[in-house]
Structure formats: structure tokens, C-alpha cells
Length: 536
Image (cartoon, rainbow, N blue to C red; front, top):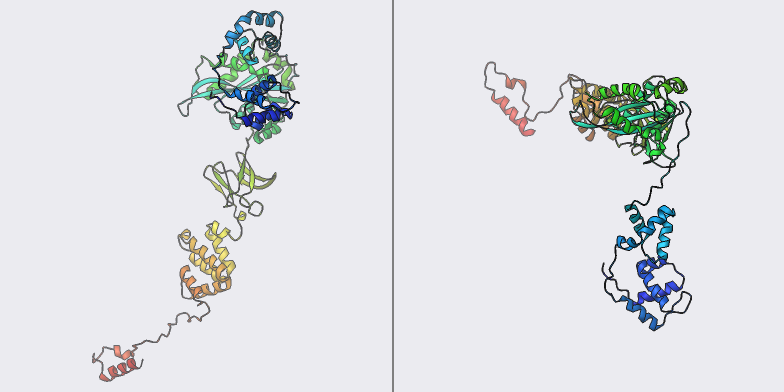
């Protein structure tokens, strides 16, 4: 480490703050120096005769203190083993014969001028195995029949997945009843909420009932906030416990003593059931685990109770369990979502519409999805229910859109016809003609433009323009727009079937085109035609 030189001004500042009563930590923060450096100068100042409540240092004393900046030869640091080796016998006797605490041993060594830190002494004693673990435990009180069950996960090993052909880790969901010690094992490959609830449902069917309290392992699918004093369950698992009627009590993280009855079962299940056995697939593992729980685990003499768990369960605990109706539970899935600008939310890769008047875009919603329905909640109030859609599906209610946008967002020909009829009789007839072909979807954009013309030029003008266009059989929205732009909808239209009288510039009588008799026109006819051409 490089030597840091402290200036004269910094030395004066250390002494000035020290004599005003500032503590060591405050000195370090105020000067930016380490506490060891400050302690060195204060001890040197005391050797020079300075006191905390005395006068300021003289020039001679400051000069003496500034000389501490000179770097001397590097001090040779001895290892802890070398320092404590002469005291090894004394340390062992103090710990074993006199049963002193390590803190007291450290104090005795300081009195004997053996300067080592407490942690150095602790590591030295641990290496010599002179310290024993101070962890203590007490036996938990026995619970009533059907009162408590403990749940834990344990890693069993690897197995080939029949679906993918790859080796995957197999976990065991183990549930042990607190009174009889009867257990149930449910092998699984994932610890998602659906897989765990499936295992719990199988356990209640195996036991024929449920306990009043379930001590949980602290896994993310069930515990959202792993707080030691106030753990917070996930909405899905809390809803499941409410449905079944038991109270969930999560254990603390890395505290196996919170569920001691099931903790040792993990090793027992792995060694006595899984290791050395061959299984076809996960279904085979679960089927054989159910039989093993009855024939092996339930028929053994338990090491604590010295009784057969299956016998105690059948005679005393089974009747005390909460009833189980056997109805399969539809696992609910909760998510927090936001309403998109298109008035939909995305849930499990599907889209669901949201009422615009209660939940505009950007609103935060809670989504509860089960096997059949998707429910949307806003601040705890149900705002919409949709049938569950597959991945890539979409459930849209036309009433969820704003009225002014529904015609553009819903590409429905029949709806466009109805909206056109609301603007006027002729507009409805025009829209019906426009969308009456064999491919009405190809004309949807023109129908949407027709409705926009009503918003731009008023429905009265659009109805008049459509009436004029229908008179001449003009079913073209672009040309209809041209009529509105040039304000031609108010001009009179010719009667149906009548040809318009348009003046011709070089008009000739009909006899000029007669070729019977003399095919050549007379000079008079030609002259009269030329005269009319000149006059025109």
C-alpha cells in the first residue's frame, strides 16, 4: 500500500476537531482520512503532552507531529499462527477446562500483551477444532391429529423426459402429517403454481382430507414476499387455500427447523425410493410413489414416534382431517397488465378487449384466468369477463370500443351497412350496393371512407351526393368524394332514361349521313354546314 503524506494543515485540523470533542468516526468523515491515521496522530499528540480539553498545540509540538509523515522501514507482520502458537496450550485449557467464552479468552490474551484481533483468534480456534457449534434446538410440541401438515421440495435425481427425450431433474413434493407422520410423495419436473396445486390435490385425495394448517416451503410460486415476519402469499395460492379451507403458513428462507418433520424425509425418499430404480416416465414414477408411501414409508417404525405411521393415521388422524369434496380445482392464474392503446390487454399470448369508458388506455388491471374464463378487475371491481382464448386468439366486444372508432376498428360489413343507414337513406343504399358483391371484405376500406365523408361534409350533403350517384349508377367512393368537393350534389339530375342535350360544335342534320341514292352530299348542305361551323 502506498504511503499517504498528511499535510501540516490537515494535522492542525485533526487536532482542532479532536479538541472540540468530535468523535473518531466524525473525524474520519470530516477530514477524509482513515481512522487508523487519525488515531496515530492523536496518540502522538498525547505523548507530546496535548490534552483534549487543553490549549492548542505549540509550534514545537506541531513540528514533532508533522515528522510522522516520514515513511519508515516497513513493519514485518507476523502471522496469527506465529503469534498464538506460544499460547496454544493456555487457549485450549481456557476453552475446554475452564469453559471460558472466546471473548474472555481474547481479553486474557490482551492482558498478556498478545495483540491479535478477535476474528483471528476465532479462526485459529476453529482450525484447531477447539470450538463447538453453539446451535441448540428443542423438540417441538406434539400437534393434534389433523392439525398440521408440512410440505417441502427435494431433488430426487435425473430422468429421461418421455416428451422431449432429454434428461431432466425430477423433484419430489413431500407432505408429512404432523401427528401420524404419514407422508405423500408427488414427483414433478417443475415447481409452477399449477404443478404444485396438482400435487396438493393428489395429496388430499391420498389422505382423504386436508389439515387445518399447511407449513409451506418458501418457493416463489406460493410466496411473493419472503419476509421473515410477514410473508406475503401469491394471489393464486392464497385463493386456493381459501377455496380448500386450510391456512397456509410459509416457513422462513433457509430455516429447516421451521418444518423439521418433513425436512429429513427428503433424504429418506431419495435414498429409499428413487435411487437404484428404473422408471418409464413421470406417470410411472407417481404411480409407484403412491404405493411406496403406503407399503414402505407408512409401514415402517418411525424413528421418533416408534409407531407405524399408516396405522396411526388410519386409527386416529384420518377422522380429524377437514373433508375433501373430490371436485377438481381449476387453477387460477393472476397477472398485472396495462390496457393497450387499442383497448385490449394481452394475457397468455391472447388479446381481450376492455371497456373504454371505465378503463382507458394505460389503466392498470388485474387479470384472473382459469380454464374457461378470463376476468378483468380494476381496483378490485370486476369490469369485464371473456371466454378463455388459445395462444394467438382474440376476444373483442364491439361495445368496448368508443362509438366514434368502432366502425374503423371492427371490419364488419353488416355493421358498416347499419352505420351507413344511420347517416341517411341514400347513404345506406349506397353502402348496401357497395358491399353487396361476392367479396364484401374487399370493399371494407371504401365503406369506412364513406362513413368518414359523413363526418367531414355532414350527413345531409353525403346523403344528397349518394342519391345523385345512385341515379347514374356511380358506385365509386372516390368519385363520390369528388362530387362533395365540387359541391355538385345540389345540381338537378336528368330524368332516368333521358339523354342529355349537349350542343355539338360541328353538329350536322341527320340527312347528311344518309347514303341512299346519291351518296354525295349536295353543295347546299355542305355550304350550310360550313356556315354553321363558322358561326359557332
